[in-house]
Every structure is written in structure tokens, then in C-alpha cells.
Length: 133
Image (cartoon, rainbow, N blue to C red; front, side, top):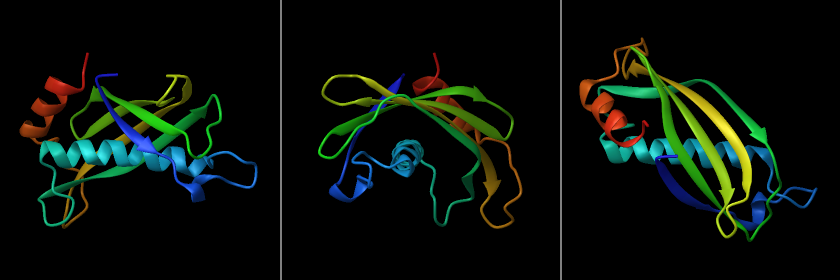
């Protein structure tokens, strides 16, 4: 992965089975992607375009529980005309054990009309420079 970020677990992330609930894995992936997008210059409220999730998936490989921490890896697998396909990994922060792999497809849409728009050149450049390879 070309970018990674820590994602600490919280006490309320554990479910009745004693491990982090599957929804938290999606929160970790979505947060990592959107934090990167905002850092690259995408304005989620008041900007010209936003990224909306078209599809997502997660393969769960091993459990984790609070107080363990996650590390989320991010790379761009494909940059299309109006979409970006992200690939993600989630590992244990302390051991590097692979916990899950994921995929998100974001479509760039006009913030007002919600109709697809081309990936802006500045965003395409940032993704290609930092998240491919």
C-alpha cells in the first residue's frame, strides 16, 4: 500500500462476540479514504464536487478487539473518467497481522446536482503521484 494511517479501536467497537464488529472495518476504510481526499483538497461540504460510494466490499481474515489498534493501507487500483477504485488493507498496528482487505469505488459527482463529473485534474494528479504503483 502506498499510504497508511492508524485507526485505534474504541471500547464500544467490540460486539457481543468479543471482537471488533464488522461495521467498524468499513468505518476505518471510509475514514482513511476521506481523510486522504480532504488532505488532497476535496472539500466535502461547499466544494464543487464530492466523492460518493458506488460499491464496497470487505474480506475479513482475522479478528481484532479493543484495545488493539488497526493500521489501514490505501492505494488507488484504478482511476477512471468519473470514478476511483480504492484497494485497502487493515492490519494489526503492533504485529502487522493482516485482518482484512477491502475495496471501495467512489464516483465523483457535482455537489449540487449529484450527477457524475470527470475526476478533476488536480485530484487525478494527486492520486497518481501518491497512491498508485
